[in-house]
Amino acid sequence: MSPETRKKLESKGIKPSIIGHILEYAAQVNNFKDCFETMENHENINKVAIKEIEKINSAIKDICRIPVAYYQFEPPKRDEFNFYCVLRNL
Picture 1 (cartoon, rainbow, N blue to C red):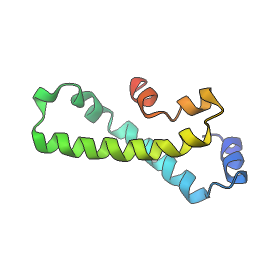
Picture 2: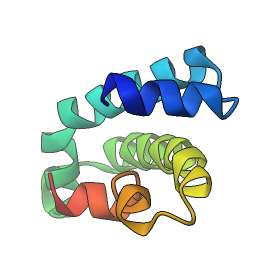
Picture 3: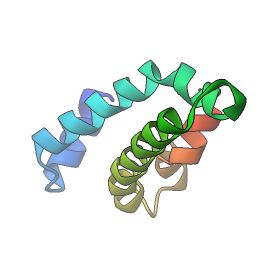
Picture 4: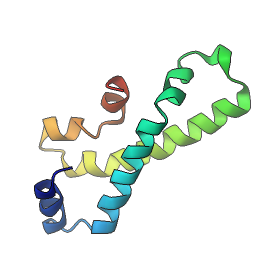
């Protein structure tokens, strides 16, 4: 995220701590890239692992809802935070 975008979000009332959390979680999504790829092939993982992966998915989707709602009238920017668009681009 550019400093200009961050300042714009903060000027709109988004707390810096929330922006920090979103950026931190975005970095974690990159760390779980292999996990998402494994999800596509359920034969390689057991049921406990599937439940854990689903919990991670759920948390990421919840996090993505905040900026998607914020950028609802800016489709190109909104798509940068769309959970499915992000997964496709991993």
